[in-house]
Image 1 (tube, helix red, strand yellow):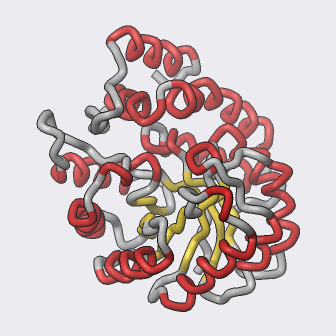
Image 2 (image 1 turned 90 degrees about the vertical axis):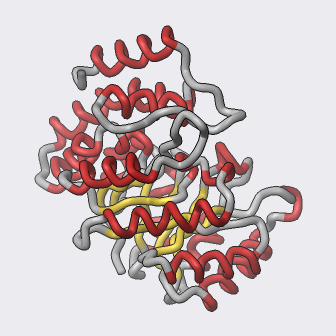
Length: 295
């Protein structure tokens, strides 16, 4: 299975009481279905999955599966800290219709997380998973960076089909692509700030937060690149930088949800301890997207 194109890491909508608003999740997905995105990442970092119970996670996956167009892939984040729990939850997600399991690096015991540990962890999961596995490297959240040699070695397993690399390091990304280029191994960036340069070194696409608010623009960069229209692709890439910073490193998930509200999606509040953005911050986010020409 080749994973390519633009994917939004879907946020989890909550109502005023902090309960999951499944109706709004369905509404968002129905709108995204009308765009050129290739699929969705459910239960990724932007879903606030660490705040969800297992029962809630399963219900989110079931709701998403019912709503997602048959032409688009459903990737599901199933990574947990222990190997055994990850295997168990991956099987449950597969039973609910997940097409691909996205497995974040375990990170609580950071000093023990070596190349050998990751190899054992991912190979055991891949051997047991009924669906293909996509590695997930996100140093900003885990405090760990998967080595290129680890990703390259894991790519040899027939059930490990790619990696979402959110390091933002194009040099690292290009090395991964170089070492896995002869295999059916998809390399996707997790940062829209480097989407265009990532495509230039051979990336297959991206799973990017900004795609929740601007899915068409992320797809446009990929389309323009494939058409050889580098001038417009680069121009659009530059326009995405400030909005992306606003909804990732500056305001995080609450800022992303506020941006979704501005574009007619349901963002809403996050779960505590994440606080909603203030009125002044919402105005700043609006000004950033307006200044970039998106509002």
